[in-house]
Amino acid sequence: MRFLTTTVLAVSMGLAAALPAAAQQLSLSEISGYLNAMKTAKGDFTQINEDGSISTGTIYIKRPGKVRFEYNAPDTGIVIAGSNTVVIYDKKSNQPAETYPLSRTPLSIILAANVNLGQARMVTGHSYDGTATTVRAQDPDNPEYGNIELKFTDNPVELRQWLINDGNGSQTTVVLGDLQTGGNLPNSLFDVGAQPSAANR
Image (cartoon, rainbow, N blue to C red):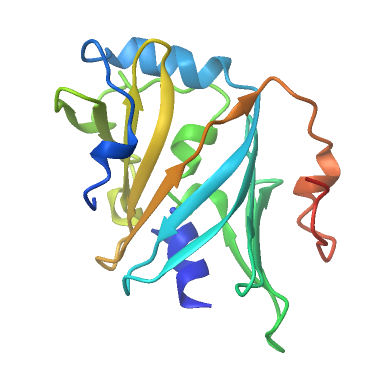
């Protein structure tokens, strides 16, 4: 369960080779506009956990406020954010699901109804390595909740990975495959009150 908890409370290695070449550094307004235009998205992800292990699965995003991580076997976890709550399920565990307020996780920054990375004190880093633009952001009123480092490529603008640092110093990296945007994702995928089953892929 630790890797699941870290994904949410906290959700790089030499991954630059996996990223397509970018033409220039993206501005904060360009990145905010890209995130605000992303209403739905689905794609594969690879997660590098704090202990160095690797997990894979499918991510579903429905902005604002909704995300779902389905982990592939042998992992059995499903993480769902909806109704301002994050719920972590582990089908192999006899323990009850873990729940957290979405507002206490760095993912709330990119799931907000109106992403504005130009907001005062939200962005603590904005850099470009010749391949991708990296933005480090945190809730300016609650820096103790941790921060998120988002990596974007250009032409077209795409979110390629993020690294989450939680308030306890743990880190988790999520590398995204090609995201399919603009599809229809039913709200039932993000129902935090129902025991989840695997979505149709």
